[in-house]
Every structure is written in C-alpha cells, then in structure tokens.
Image (cartoon, rainbow, N blue to C red; front, side):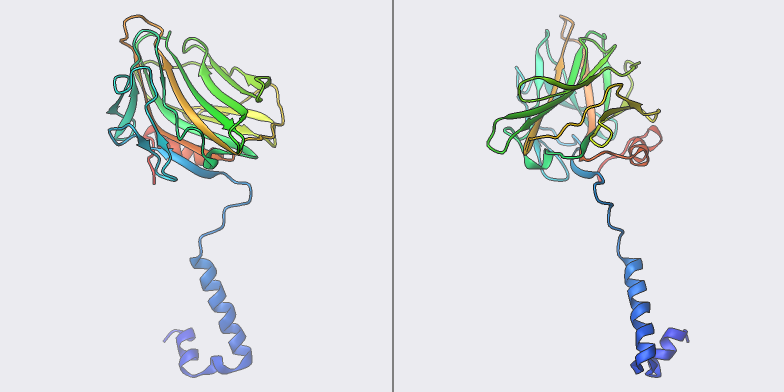
Length: 273
C-alpha cells in the first residue's frame, strides 16, 4: 500500500506532528489542482466575435456583446461568408458607401480600459487597393459624453495604416503609421495594442516581429464604456470589391507575444474557446 494510505489506516495522522504533515500534503495537492491566477495587470479577454451566425446581430462569445448592422443599406452590405475559421463577416459596400457595425451603442463597460488594450483579427481583401477599412474604439464617459477615440484605419487605400488615439476634443494624443505590405485575396492576422506603461502602440502582422510606435504618450482614459465601429468604404465605383473579417477579439490590457502566437496558430487561426 502507498505510504500515505498506510499511515492514514493506522491512525498516525491523529498525532499532532503527523497531522501537520497531512495538512501540508493536502495543501500541496490542492495547489496542484488549482489553476494559476493570472498576474495582476495582465490582459483580460472581454469580447470575441466568431461571426458564425447569419446575423445581424453577431454576438460575442465572452460577454454576449452584439454587433448590429448600421450600414447605409442594412442587410445588403453585410453577409455571412467563408471565414478563416468556419464562417466570417463579409462587408460589401457599393459606390463608396460605408458599412458601420456599431456594437452595443451607446457603449458597454466591458470595453473600457485602463493600462492598455489589444485587438486581434483576421481579414482578407478582395479587389483593388483603393478600398478603406477601419476599426474604431469610441470611448464614452459613464454619463454618455465623448471621451477618448482610438482607431486603426487604412489611409485611403491599403498601402498604409493610420493608428491614432485622440481626446474628447479631437486633439491627437498619439499617432503612428507602421510599415505595411498587405496581400490581396489571402487571409492575414493583425494584432493592435496600446501599452500605457510604455506609452506605445504595438502592431504585428501575421506572426512577424512587433513594431512599436516612434513616439510615445501616456494616455489615461476617462471613458467608462465604449462601442466599436467596423467600417469599410469601397474606393471603386463598381461595388465589386469586398472584405472579409473573422475572429475579432478585444482584450483589456496588452496581449503578450506568446498569446498572439497562440492565436496565430501556425497560420491556421483559432476560434473561441
């Protein structure tokens, strides 16, 4: 018989000294069974849109936050399409129209941040490079007034990203244009973070090296809630080009390189959970 079982059967744990041994043994076993506590200040997953359902709305798998179709032609400019992992969201605007998917307007506290934030998503471009795409994080105070705004956008075409945060009066707090080379007609992975401790934006394409913004700024948000816009503008006049988005998620805090690599998943992508 195992020593622990034998000692128990003989009643030896009733003795004070061996009782302490038993307590330490059980505490060790309990510690082994308990999942480790994430470090303070680490990233917390707040939303993950899988785009599996034929929305709108599209519901995130973490906090049930809804993306709704607020486009110029609801029902005609958003559709379900083959995604990076299973299904995805297709944006097909005609003639320079925009598709705005406002999420839980006028905002949700789950999307507020303090030490930083991270978005990751997969996307695929179809057609010419005159199309524009953006993800907007729109911060609001708890009483509904404008607070900070942060956006990740193509600069009139997919040859350059514009990344910026501004205050409630539209004064630029931090702005940057990372180096960009984007493929057409194939999926790619993007990670976008703001790290308050470093005062820097972080941009990662696929599983490449991190790029850090040239300038830095310590942004202390006043927003107690926020909503998200996903916007696409067709730069052509035919209405032919479109864009696919999949596995969009949002973290409160800065995602580590290891976590980003896990989401990249050797180029295969990952869904939730």
